[in-house]
Length: 54
Image (tube, rainbow, N blue to C red; front, side, top):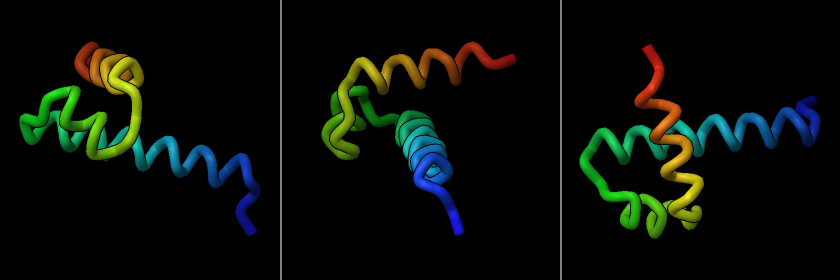
């Protein structure tokens, strides 16, 4: 059985993957924000971290 904490981590992971996929597909921050109902600030933070990975 998965705990509530584990479920939250899975949701964050899935959301992060979706943000990166949409970004790589060429969607704007505004479009991603609208599609996923997440603030543009969160989208920007995730994409910035993704783009700095070496």
